[in-house]
Amino acid sequence: MIGPKSNKSPGQLMMDQVIFAAECIFDVEGNCLIEICDAHNDGQLLRGMKCTHPNVSFLYGIDELKNCGWDYAYCILLGFHAMANSGGVWDHTFRNDILHIWREGKDECIGEVTALILWANSKSVPVALVSGEGPFAHEADVFSIPTYTISTHTIPEQYAALRQAIRSGVSCIRNVKYYADEFKIFVEVDNADKLTLLDEKGYVIADGAVQFAGVEAFFNELYCFAGDLNQAGRQIIYTNTEFARMLKKMDAQQDILRELSEILHKPLSLLDAADRDLIRRRMNLCGN
Image (cartoon, rainbow, N blue to C red; front, side, top):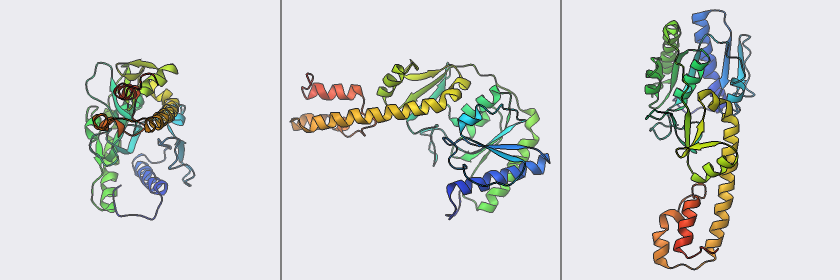
């Protein structure tokens, strides 16, 4: 929810919202069991938070969700956001170093909303509602799934609107269609060197991206993939730091430095092998 500043931690704010959503579901369904997954990394926002409701349990992170059995009547995607570079306040697609994700044979990119809808549907679990911030609704519209976009209204007004959205989404759940998805998934990252390093680890690299066999394979490998991206990022920063130290020891003409200014001012995490090769050629460092 967007609202006035609060003294509560992000985890407590998130707990307040998911428990509110659970109470809305109890109002509709009566005595049922609800499982809540904090999909942030290893569930760091809700991990350690207290909930005493006997019919509510928790999963922490995608890695636990993939092994949960998926014995659910439906799911709700609560507190989501738009895909990377789409103009939302918190827009991103899983990680800041993932630029785009797309499916084989499809022109449009997908965000976390589409990916999770496809994953849930591959488990025969329909999505009753998607709520969140930014321009995400079109992803759910493709599957005729109701959405609720948070606004600048007061918190009570937002909670009232979310309650109605949950009631409406849950009541229509029996009309939701399942969408089988067997398309390969392609993930574009922010540095070509990462593709080289991931290729060395056995990932399939195609069309300038990391290829996964399908949406289920992507989520099954996501936790390890994130760790390998972190490791690759650290290695790239180390390589570029050493390269920058070497450049500082070299003399170069000012016109060459101006020509290379755009590359030389890149963050160390984004400088790749092609950039380093161009710098070497222009500064006559091919033998170094």
